[in-house]
Image 1: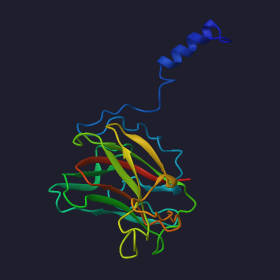
Image 2: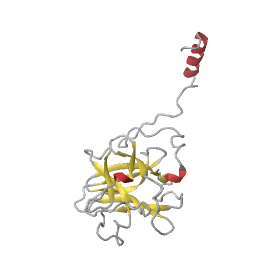
Image 3: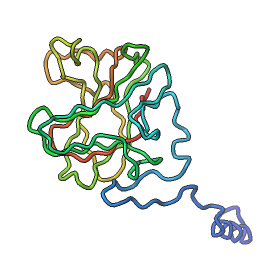
Image 4: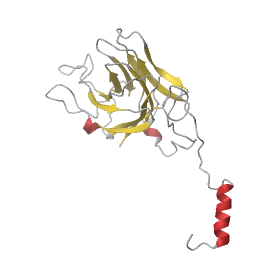
Length: 229
C-alpha cells in the first residue's frame, strides 16, 4: 500500500466489500451434459469486430451472419450409417449468449458426418484474402467419450463437387483435440493441410465454407465462429 495512508487503505477495502471492485460478470453453472466454463457477462464479446463474425447462433437458426459482403447457412452432411445424428443450433449450453451449435452423432461406418458454414457472397466463393485464419469456441459435451482430434477446416472449389477434379472432399483441415471446457481456438490458414499429394495451395480468395468433419462418434459444441486477420 505504498503511497496510500491507513485511512485510504481502509476506504479501498470498504469500497471493495461494498461492490465497487466487484467483477462485472456473474458466475454461471453449466447444465448437466454441457461443457464447463462458459464465458460470463454481457460484455464478453464487446471488443470483437462485428465484420469478422461468421456465426454465433444467436438467431436460433442455421443462418450465418450477414456482414462484410457475405452470408450463408450451416449445411449438414449426414452419414446414414449413423443411427443417431443431432446437428443443429441449440440453447442452454452456449459459450456465450444463449445459443451454440451442437454436433452429436452415433458411430458412422462409412464416410462420417460433417457440418459446414457455407458462405454466400454475391453468388460466388468468398474472397477471404484479407484474413489469415478462423477462430471459434468449442468443447466436448458430456456424451463424447474419450477425447479425439476433431478435424476443422476450409472448403474451396478445388475440394467440393462438382468443381473439384483431383482433390474432391480433400478439404484443407487441421485436427484439434477439444476438452470438456469451453476454449477459444484460432486456426491459421497456413496450418491447414490436405491428405493427398501434391497439395494445392489454399486459394484464400475462393473460400466456400468452414467445415467440421468427423469419422467417429462425437458430442461437440461450437460457438462464435469468426474470421481472423
